[in-house]
Amino acid sequence: MNLSIQPLIDLAHTDLELQTFIHSKSQLEKEIDTASSVVNHHKKNIEEKNSELKALVNESEEIKKNIQIQEQLITHLNEQVPKIRNEKEFAASKSQLEEARKNLGVLEENLLEIDINKEDLDKEMEKINVKLNESNTEFKQETSGLLKEQKKAEKQIAILAPRRTSLLQKIPKNIQRFYERCQNSGITTPICAIVDKSCSGCHMVLLPQLINELMSNPNSHKNCPHCKRILYFPVSEEETVS
Ligand SMILES: [Zn+2]
Image (cartoon, rainbow, N blue to C red; front, side, top):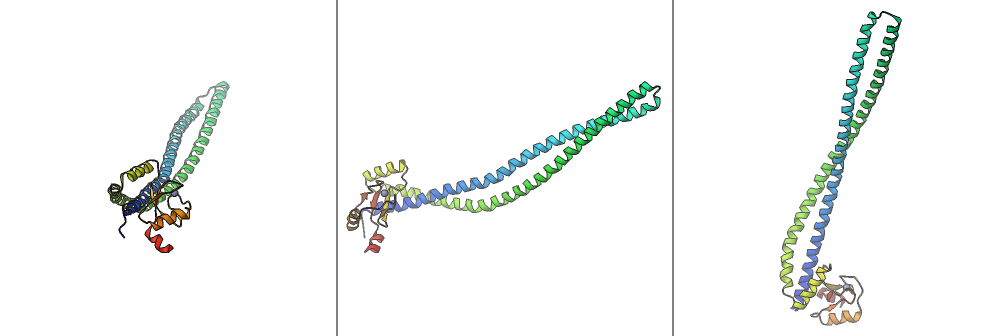
């Protein structure tokens, strides 16, 4: 059957295929983004923990220095003991020693606390590192497939987009303008077939009269009363109905 409506049908088919690939390409992009967001989350977490660890190391170095100062003071005070000449000097030395020992005790406790925190942080970082490695492996596995699919979709789009342009040039000017207006306003399939007695664009059920008119004259087309898309009656549908 050589229908003059054939260019419209070809355009509708090409557009449907093209839109499918465009949609799948954008879905793949989203999936790749999501996959990398998990890896990035763990990387950021590791960075934060690293700077926490650095702060603890600095604090610990500072405390170690102060411990050394107190220890040196205690040694010095002990060395002075034999030289004490009276009760007054003895009492002063005793109170200085007590003070230094007390300070040393507090510093050692602080150091211990920091060491415990450091150990906890190390364990946490180990866990995060495991997660990071897992998510990295997962990301590579996942995206290798996704990237292949994305390439395929891009290839199909590169074939279909120019085909669509050349098919568009074969249809009457008034339909071309309608078509472009539709696509500019977001209707990606301005021409569509009647499927299951409904418009395959908006899925609204069509009046039998409209279907009969198009069925009896398969070379004609009409606008969908609901979404204004151009409707045609597909030949295969006619065969299954009759
Ligand atoms: Zn419709």
